[in-house]
Amino acid sequence: MFPKSDATKELPKVAFSWFSTKSGRYETESVGPMPLKITGTITGAPMVIGGVGTASKRTITVARDILAIKPDYGSLRPASARSGLFEILLIAVPILSFAATAAFVRRRERLSGDAGLRRRIVASKAARARLADAAKVGQSAGDVAGALGAALAGFVADKLALPPASVTAATIGDVLRARGVPDGVATDAARLLHELDERRFSAGSGGGGAEDLYARVESVLAALERRLS
Image (cartoon, rainbow, N blue to C red; front, side, top):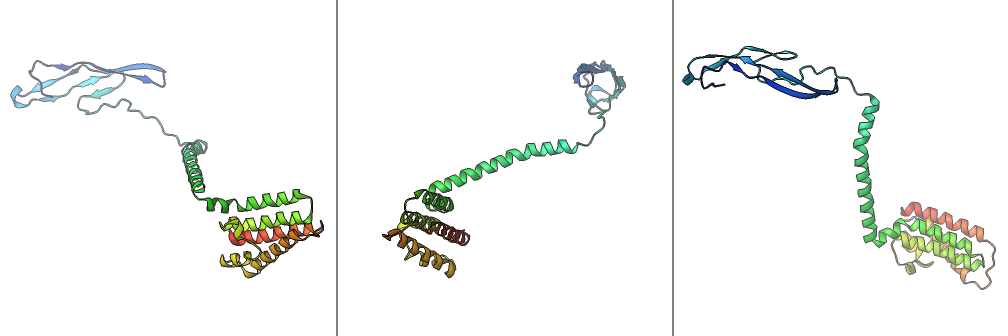
């Protein structure tokens, strides 16, 4: 402080108001006036040698650079495990929700832009739907065999993203072997599809053996699903 004259004898009173959470109302604390003693000459950078001012609640010395608004900070208590878990959930839930939404949007964009990928993903579901359609035919063994053959050939075509017409009894074995399916599984699929074609086009197809055909088709589909997943 550099006074302009030695006539300055004190600092004026300073007041500060704040809201007290303990009393529930605004309170005011003040300090000063503070007596001053000026030494030296006005042109020679005089110094202030402080006095002591008395606040309304505590004693504050002029020599302090910063006056604490609340010198008594009370005691710190550890947060309970329950409140800590709640805070973690508040942070984690938005992050997980954003990640799930981003993954869903990305997957939808991939499926909308890649028809082959979409067919591979829904191949098993489509095969089950075709099997259900075969169970609803109920007319002749030829109709049932045709629906079961469509389920088997359709599954392979969807899973490998091939044109449906390219998977036949004559080609299915080679197609599967080329994709790394064991020879035994590929041969079973080819024989079954050939048998289904024969029953489909046989003029004397009866209704016997339908349950056995269902079981065999489901067995081959399960084996192919494991190899082509």
